[in-house]
Length: 111
Image 1 (cartoon, helix red, strand yellow):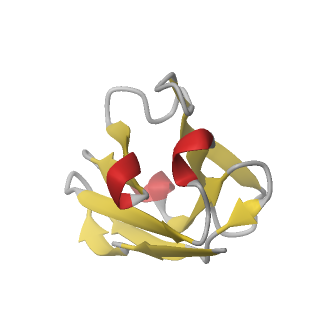
Image 2: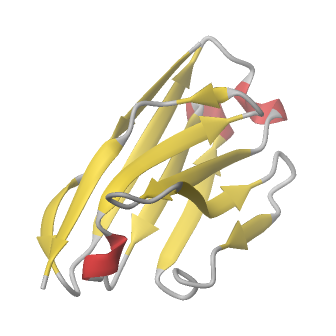
């Protein structure tokens, strides 16, 4: 199983980024998927998840700013991040199913 995450970068506060995570070698559509954020010096936390049935949950800190979506045909999960804040800085990891993690993609938001 491979999870290829991309889309991170350096942006200014208020700008947007779109993260993409493509899954290879896994029956993507049957699994819950999600994005997790690890800020510098902190533990990894859930940002947004979307179940195999389409149920979505967001962390309170990103509600109304981030949107998670999935394309089962492309085996891909997306995270649209708008109105970025400096506290959104960190590594973002995608997860497919209970145990499959992608490499982190770095998001840096300058004030």
